[in-house]
Amino acid sequence: MASVSPLLLLLLCSYHSVVAHAGDGQTYKVLELNSEAVCSERNAISSLLSGTTVALNHRHGPCSPVPSSKKRPTEEELLKRDQLRAEHIQRKFAMNAAVDGAGDLQQSKVSSSVPTKLGSSLDTLEYVVSVGLGTPAVTQTVTIDTGSDVSWVQCSPCPNPPCHAQTGALFDPAKSSTYRAVSCAAAECAQLGQQGNGCGATNYECQYGVQYGDGSTTNGTYSRDTLTLSGASNAVKGFQFGCSHVESGFSDQTDGLMGLGGGAQSLVSQTAATYGNSFSYCLPPTTGSSGFLTLGGRGGASGFVTTRMLRSRQIPTFYGARLQDIAVGGKQLGLSPTVFAAGSVVDSGTIITRLPPTAYSALSSAFKAGMKQYRLAPARSILDTCFDFAGQTQIAIPTVALVFSGGAAIDLDPNGIMYSNCLAFAATGDDGTTGIIGNVQQRTFEVLYDVGSSTLGFRSGAC
Image (cartoon, rainbow, N blue to C red; front, side, top):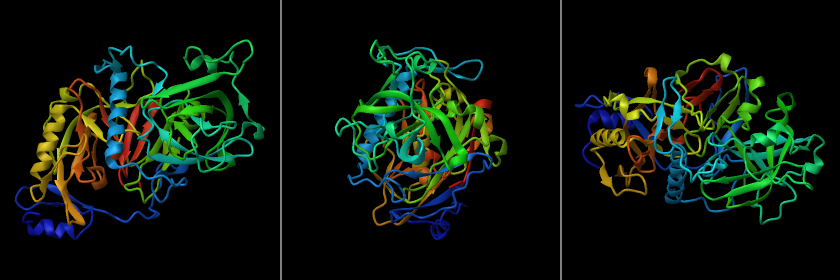
């Protein structure tokens, strides 16, 4: 570590403080390295007091309700899977997502190699919630994904294999008094939009099938049952989900997936009449702390900075926003808004934020200029702005803020800037490729998806 100014040394003694660096006027934050992975209760409280809230945890952390007996994937493995997910999302926008006159993400060209039934890669999904399903309610711990619409759980019968091992018992539809299979003639079945849904002369139950970007698949009966979120008073009757009987490619111990996308099958769309087509979540800063997922409550929103939500008419699953600049160390980079013309998907399942190359290059250069007290380190997978923190327990890093259209700026938490020893951003293939706001940058913010009013909001320090 090179020589450090007196003000920077003072900053290192004051965790999460922000001060001006002596000599260059930049602002810095302190990041604690190698903190012990123990479950700590943080003050994670949604500001949307009229909604329904459930606890949210990192699936590999000590707070997880489904602690895995398997070895956690390495960071290099996660980054490789993350790249597959990002590429899959970008293929869906055919490399040329543009913003039309109404302010929506408009797909101008669709790749014929990406069938509509594909979901995003599941291997990068990191956050889980526990809900009740059926009558009587059986607890199911599911990953959440804003890049998926169809929710599903493993159901009995489902031998292992073809089902993956999970912590609790499989959901047994025969033991639920409110379970019903969706009929082939029902509008919900036709709405799945899949060819060959398994309906025939001897099978009148709607069959669903989802193939994800990483090659994993889930197949079974499209069903209805009562979903309980946080008590009997918050039950969603007739909730549509997939009862999975055959699957491949899954290795975690969760019970299934909760789709939070914008399509008709998602939890958000199904509960729009009750919760106003809005939801929010807070992703905790570390694996050792908790966050929350809230449905509804947009009328009570306060303390948010907001920007216009962008959507694609052809791909309604995804929610987007448009960046207009980035600030490093308190100073905006002065990027042209045209650099971000393709828009960015705000995604709970992608780990690392993808920026247009022009924007990423400017960010990387400015960040490295503020990190001269640390030696550069070799690139790691998709991350190429890395540093040598050997022997350090705390580091001082330049602040980074994302500036969205309309001037909404979010000052990232220190845990939302770095991924291990590297800057947690990567470049897309070209400036015309759709960007992605990943979950690292979303940490500690309550991210509000007010679909009904086409608004995205961010409230800092929520968990």
